Each structure stands twice: as C-alpha cells, then as structure tokens.
Length: 79
Image (cartoon, rainbow, N blue to C red; front, side):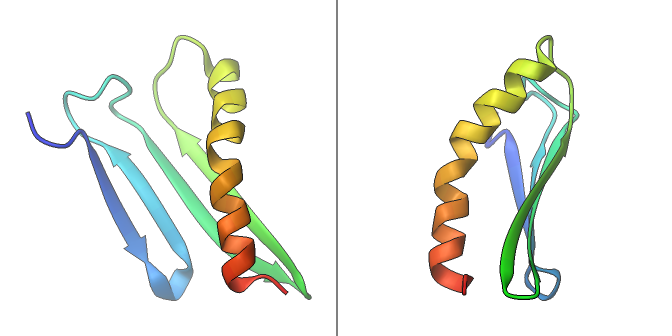
C-alpha cells in the first residue's frame, strides 16, 4: 500500500486539505486548514470529518498537533 493520505493545496483560497484514502484507519476522512484575516488579526481554521471511536480525544490531540503549524503560519503571514 502507498501513502494513506493525500494532500491538496488551494493557494488562491489559502486552504490545505489532508484526505485519507482507502486503507487508512480513519478512512473516509478529511481535515481542511484555512488561513484568513479579519482586520489585522490572523485566524487559522481547522475543520475535519472522519471516523473515530474517540472524537473528543481527537480534538485534544489535534490541538496539540496543529499548534506548531499555527505558530508557523503566524510568523509567515501574521501582522
């Protein structure tokens, strides 16, 4: 089996989506990251859907996993 995830970027929309493919533990599933500004404030939205036996646990794990990414985006495009 190859890579169990696909990564799709849409630069004009400032989005990045991770998609699980057949064979992945959480297939079908996806997580979309979006960066946008309201005034001078940077917002980093993460929206996902998928299968899991512990959705609440996934939220807390996701927060810890994506914190570094949010900080990187803030350094690159934040005000």
